Length: 299
Image 1 (cartoon, rainbow, N blue to C red):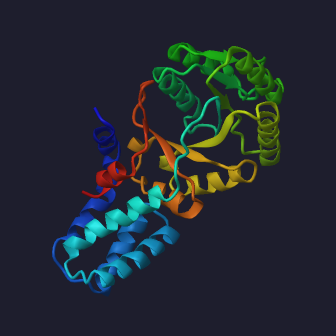
Image 2 (image 1 turned 180 degrees about the vertical axis):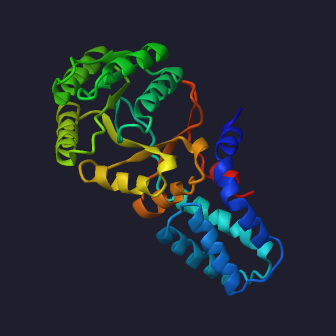
């Protein structure tokens, strides 16, 4: 099953949330103020976010005027293209090796699972991979990562619970250098109840990576739970305080009608979605495709 088939199935709830409204708008009718108002509300209700919707509507009106569009059916194609443009505006970097991916995110978003899937994905591409268990505060975090490492067939570097996360990363980098490892996947703590400590810890880990491994390509990814809707935008803002977020891994799309938040994130925060979880299996992590994503929401 290809990405489009998987993503179409997973976005069923999001599509159902707006399909009726949009289909009604795009079949007949005239391009008047009522049309624009109803379209705007339909987009906002899919959790695209007011700011991003406002930009879409402004650009859509301009395109309609420039192309002298008078048929509501033609508006749909223009709307879809504007959405794709928003998602494609932030380019996903092409990987260079050795590669270090620091994976951040609050607890409960599926971060551990995402790291396991990433490990398997890189392994399938012929890369040597080591998982770094730098969340030393959450009970059993390293144990859960170890299970995923075994499933993916990759190495893991871990210390005892309560150890200094920076020390774990330091040792993992030394190991990666000696073994010429292609990819380091760094798990991090996701506690937000003490935000200052978390942010200081992330900054410290980031400094260690930059200092000890200047020759690597270093990127910071955040895992977001799509069911949280606009709260996902807030989470990116919080983590951006400590580290520059380079990309997003989106999970739990199948459980939400709020898949439109992807557009809000891309439009408001200028951060690309890199991967999407499309199932529970270890191989169910796909490269994000903007055209397929929009086609799955608006047919």
